[in-house]
Amino acid sequence: RANLDTLVIERGAYGGNIFQTSEIENYPGGMPAETGAEFSARIEAQAEAFGMQRAYGNVSEAELEGPVKKIVCGDTSYLAKAVVIATGTVPTALGFEGEKEFTGMGVSYCAVCDGPFFSGKDVFVIGGGDAAVDESMHLSKFCRKVTVVHRRDEFRAAKSIVDKAAKIPNIEFLMDTVIVKAVGDGMIETVVTENVKTGEQQVFTAREGENFGVFVFVGMKPQTDIFKGVVDMEGGYIVTDEKMRTNVPGVFAAGDVRKKSLRQVVTATADGAIAAVEAEAYIVETGC
Image (cartoon, rainbow, N blue to C red):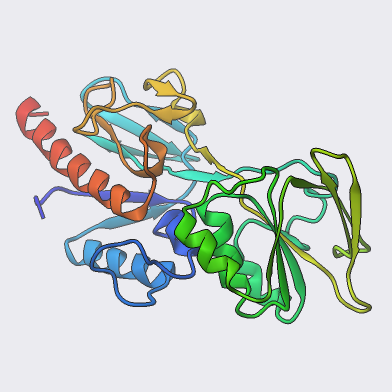
């Protein structure tokens, strides 16, 4: 809208993590029962209507000092007067035996993406935050049974979400427990859990001819490795002021990649609006 030439570099799906969300309930003014993919498509269409240009690729290098910034994607380089870092986060792996081996073959980090593969089957959801409980409710719509495994005796998720999940007949909570092993021939056929307080192990075996799904939601990792030593960070998250400015002039950050207290789509869109306006102001003020 400021008539600036704007390029968005993406390596996956536009919208980031919200693209994988089954239903958005906490965005003021959102469409009823709208999926993350639908929401992302509306944002993408609006940006395109105002002239957004796009490029696909993995950013391998970022030279952000000086009046002209350089972003490198393989053999291609892009030059800009201002940069907004919105690289977001990725799911954290848990590290239990078999997790890496069965990733994509029973272990998943996206219920929306892989849930339908386990229609009518039993699945496990690992985690105790909003994402874990929310995704367990999504899975309960088509899975026979959803067992939520949480290593603590209380959930971190909002009480309203937990109460809602507790009322769903095919959701079961397994507290003070972790998954230690997943075993199977090609797909997960056996899951071993352990009580963190007693050390007692429990073995779950899939019904004959079936297999388990294990969905992991135990945290996120900010995608900031290429910016280390370039912009200030805390715990891997980029530090900004209230205007989304980093310590490097002309470089801003927005969304989940930023150090802040709440990571939701509503705060990400607010960050983006502020970063865009401030990037424009920076370009005008510096005359670069």
